[in-house]
Image (cartoon, rainbow, N blue to C red; front, side, top):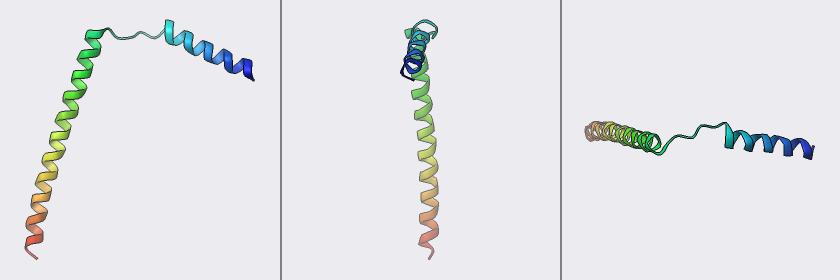
Length: 64
């Protein structure tokens, strides 16, 4: 059992080091900026929707 587990881990690390293609820094930076900008835009949209619905609900509750 131990040999089998050791073999699996060795194969895992070999594949991780030799077969995985890691992105270059410019591609990594570009992708990171894209994700951050997208996340910020989604947060703004959700915040605006929340603001609109809370304003509507305050108006509805003030009627009663």
